[in-house]
Each structure stands twice: as C-alpha cells, then as structure tokens.
Length: 283
Image 1 (cartoon, rainbow, N blue to C red):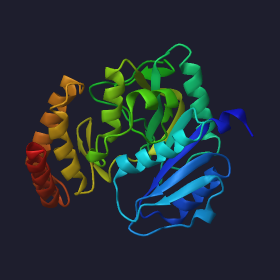
Image 2 (spheres, helix red, strand yellow):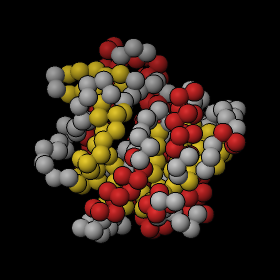
Image 3 (cartoon, rainbow, N blue to C red):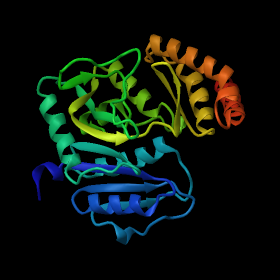
Image 4 (tube, rainbow, N blue to C red):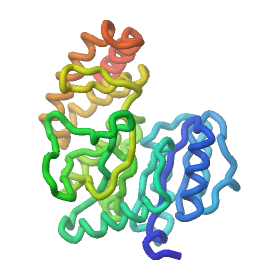
C-alpha cells in the first residue's frame, strides 16, 4: 500500500445521490480508507458496494456538519490517519487527487508550521474561472494563499488540527459550518489557506445574479433559513472577524430587500430569511 494513501481518510456525505455520485465514491474506495455518511431518508446504497469505505445510513438529514463529524470520528479511529480529505458528493476528482492534496499539505506545512486546513483553487464550473472574493482578491503568483475561511469541498485537514480545534458545530446544520471551523482554528493560532497547484470544478449555489462585476450566488430557498439564522448566532461569537460580520450584515440586508423582486422563488426565499432571523434572534 502506498504510504501516502495509507495516511489519508476520505469523508463523503450523501444526500439523495445519483448513480454517478455512487460510482465516484466506489472508485475512490478502491484506493483509500474512508466513510460515506448518507443523509438520505432511506439508504441509497449497501455497505458491500464500497471496497475500503464504511457506509453509514443516517435515515434522516442530519446536516452536513453532523454528517462530517460522524466521518471525522471514523477517521480518528484509524491510527494511520494523518489527513482527512472532504469530498462533496457531486465533485468529480481524479483518483490521485486525495494523495496530491495531502502531499501539498505536507509540503506547505514545512514553511507554514501551523497549517490546519488546505483547500484547492475553486473553479466555477460554468465560467472556468477561479472564484474570487471582491474584498480579498488573490492577484499574487504565490503557490499558497492564506485564507481566513475556505469551503470544505476538496479540502485536506490534519489530524493534529482536528484534535486541537475540535469538530464542526453540528447545531449550524449546513451554512457557514466550514467558515466557523476556520475561524476557530485561526483563533487558536492555526492557519488555513488554498493552493494554486491543485484545483477542482465546483458550482456555488444554483445560479447567479450579476450587478456589474459583482456576482451574487443564488441558493435553494431553504438554505436562506440557515444562512440568516446562523448569521445571528455568529454575530455573538468573538472569534468571528468583525469585518465579515459587517459585510455579511450588509449583504443580508440588501438581499432581504431585493430578492422578492429579482430572484426566481424570491418570495419563498424571503420567507425563509425572515424565519431564520426570527429563530436566530431567539437563539
């Protein structure tokens, strides 16, 4: 067995997967240890379908945070695990991608000793351009870029960081779960970032609105409940960056005003936003 791959543990979360999702997980299970946590209301697969992956059927939607926590718990049971790689069910990665991101992590950590989480460059599936923050654009030629927060898709986390920082806040269910973990890691002196050496294709949301050079990702209506509720919770946490609180507060206020008029199912989104605010304020 390859020494690098024996140190890697894959965590995948299913929710009503299609056949291609299952086949992709089967391909990776031939090469790595890992787990599939299925958040579907009934099992989508059978344990025998995966070579080295454990299959856990939740029989309900536990949320991405709790499902990943279950996967992390399985990873830590394996004494060989040094790196946990998180893969979305709709991501399509080369068989050696987990090895490459783990090798990249090990290499970058030689100069960034407190590296906790490394993500790839995220490429928009539709435009083939890298996602860029309007407020924190990356125009450098450096291979590694420090990021205060990164999405979990395709990311690699060290065992040491998990043991020090802890797992996801499962109460948050889905939105800002990965951001919250990064901020907690930062508060403990750890560093998160992305590498230009590796990239994955990904689509944030289900569509976009364009205001000049500003692109607004549009999510499924129910997601706005968690975005608005979780934002209210994060406002009360001292480790969350103040400028993020301000920027997100402005974004959420504006979306609350224009979504009913400019977005398909905007009124439905608005209702979820309002309920999220109400529940978030009441904690």
